[in-house]
Image (cartoon, rainbow, N blue to C red; front, side, top):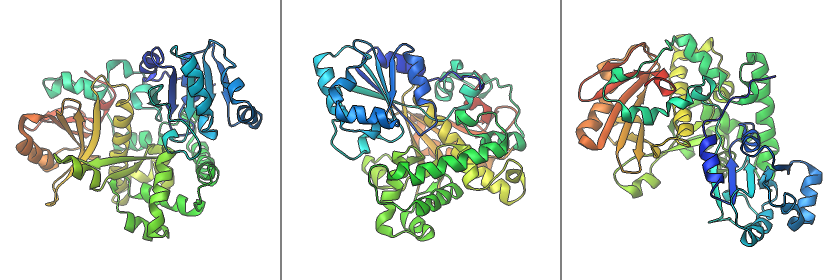
Length: 419
């Protein structure tokens, strides 16, 4: 039986559940939402709307359905199957607002699901469960998130890490991904699981609420995004390569986002309006799934030159996934952006904290970091001054380095360990 891995977001979910009547646990299928819900409330009544008889009961008697836990907690899995059930939940909460009454899990963004529904605004709070992070897999989440630890560090050598990483190690970690169901299984088994997973998503889940989308075109779009992992999103180019009408590409991208399969990283500028209109970078949320969509194995990713080029893109996507997941439980609240100006200066990630302080991160798959690798960070340091609190390169190097101007190179493993 697979080892049950503790989820780093659980303490935050517990805190929210002690305050709000409804906790919504969202995320892609098979990321561990139901498991987390039951860990939060082991004695709860749990039902699943994927079960046809349960769905019919909820549809025919919504008031009785939402009352079946009495004063306890009712867990409703795959809540997006019946959006109208939110109306009965709202009425029940308005009659009894004590915390922890409902835990709703969903593998499609409820806010974007069609149909009669109540938003539950002011009655519900949400957490997102991502694929397993390396800090969860390796049991180091208690050390704090990368951003929290980086904020407390005064020197690159404050990071002590014990995980040397070769290109082979990096490729193996990336292709393994973070879906709990295939954690620590043979690559052939994992690949077969990915095949079934994607087939169900594009041929069943994506069409569940009447969306008129072509599953084959959606799969083609997924493969293109994976092959261009962490690239700027150019809809016209994607439409042409995927054989889609330009006018329909947005609907396909929106569905992939609703299913929590893609991660969009908006451009950073001091101008808030331009952030909303600039080109986002898009990536697949799990590095293992991305590798499968690219037909890339751990061995092929270490071949020169093509494999190493793809490894660089997959490494950036991997870091995006780790930072996105860690933002869910970080003590430092932050949003993730990328930077690129009209002259081609770019930095992979800019993390903006609630106090508007900035952290810049460049990601490299190279095992050697040189001055040319920090040119974008140095440019930002000159432009932003003290507002840029940290500027770092993450790479599979063995020890921390300093490049002056408070610019550091850190081992990639500091993402999940070291302080």
